[in-house]
Length: 124
Image (cartoon, rainbow, N blue to C red; front, side, top):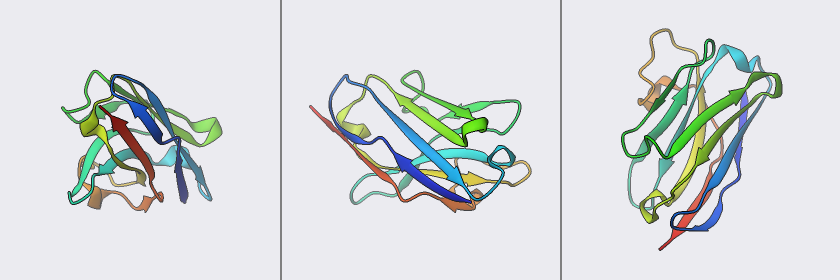
C-alpha cells in the first residue's frame, strides 16, 4: 500500500485545514489509519486514528475536540479536519496504515505503511 498525504499549508492561529491521505496498491478498507506529526527537533507524536469497520476513532488529548478523522473507503481516502489550530500544531503530518489485531493506535510501530508527510504551519 502506498500512502500520500496532502493538504498542508500556512494558516493563522484559530484557522482550519483539512489533510487528506490517499492510498493506492491495496484494499484500503482492510487497514486502520492513523495520523502522526513531528515538529522540528521533537519525536513523532500520535494525533488520531480510525479503524476499518465499523468506524471507530481515537484522538490524542492535545487535539481532542479540535480535530476530526474520517475515511471514505470507496475513494481510498482518510481525512483529518483540523479546526481551532494553534501554533503548537505546527509540524509535518504523516498518515500511516496498519493491519495488526488489537493494535495500540498511538504506537508508530503498529503501522506498516507511511506516507511522505505534509507540512502544517500555524502562525500566531
